[in-house]
Length: 276
Ligand code: TA6
Picture (tube, protein in one colour):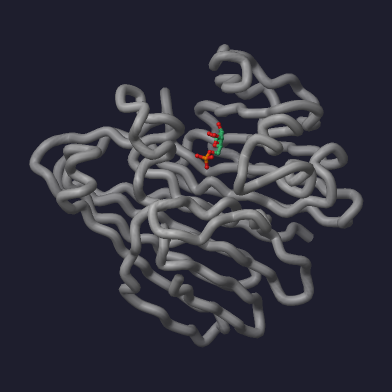
């Protein structure tokens, strides 16, 4: 499958045209930030397991068509390269594009054009642009479903979501409120935090690093780890592969879905990197 490989003084990165899927980001002098499953398939019509899957235009299972691909079709389509440029500050800017077509219109009856703008420097900035090319409003969900590489998910803590309301998708979507302390992962965790725009940090004492996730125009954050049984049951993840990963996802979904007017463009940005 075709991919763009970036090697600069600041970082290295890889992004597949399949799904405009970032599978590698490593700031110079740091360990890779992203987890990719060794059992992932790289095949048309299948999502890559790990890296930064793009979720659009619905989050999770389709609300009325169970046969539709979970998390929408954007991560299953071949995107086009619009531009690739290295800049005087040693950063590299990539733009990939995807527009609606017969196939997408059958799954989601709205015309759109997407652009993913990726800026590789000592951090990774990604902006998903959604343009409504119809003559009426439409409402969509989206996410950068980022899989972070950690030493052991049981030994990390996640800060930045204290007091935030969330839908507990591991408990029938029950609405709950996050306590004040840092988040520890000690079982299957699948939480869609709502109306939250703040910076989230993943503290990994074993790797002696803190990863940050900052965002703009995103009002939801998802924290996910499949834990033992779910990981074992996923052919493209596998036994024990829940340990070295955690997802902290920059999203707009459910109560925080986006309604976009005709001709308008929405831009959601996520910036990840190593703090300090
Ligand atoms: O973001 C968490 C989640 O919605 C989980 O419920 C789980 O389904 C995960 O995404 C992975 O989804 P996928 O379709 O990539 O297997």
